[in-house]
Image (cartoon, rainbow, N blue to C red):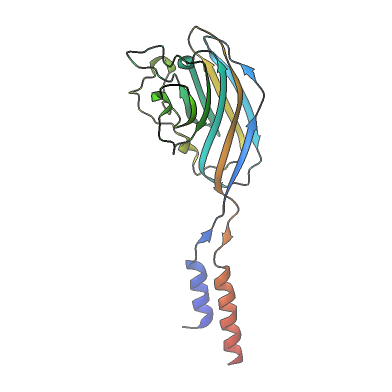
Length: 209
């Protein structure tokens, strides 16, 4: 087979390598969440991301006060929603949900504990609630269909919104800060570069031969 033909076939068969990068975007503007108001609050950030294809999204969320079992929160990006919090601790036997006030969360699909099932202080790493249902009917047995992986494959650029509502009567909480950590493929580099160099060397050798 001619060297040029072989080189062309090698280049066509060689996959592109995309470099994984992680970017962080944060909002540090405290905002009170109205008590017993399904309209809630929205905070927005705009990401000028180099990521063309997301492979993982994680979220930090810190709230103070209120009653954790009253809270409903989701992350929105490009008309896709991941449910972060949906009345944690709420079951048929405990309709008021988790009794604590305030959360310091690192939410990731790879965490070991479902936030809705967590006992004790809601501090540390948890899986997002993921229950894409009306907070009035959210229970521990509700299917989880909206994890953070719903964003995988999307571009990281554009608007990201955090929605938080307190959906039952009680104390009013506040959102203190939140952040999204975006991991994914940046501008790809051809892994065929080495093959190009090899092919050039072969062509040069043939001409000299």
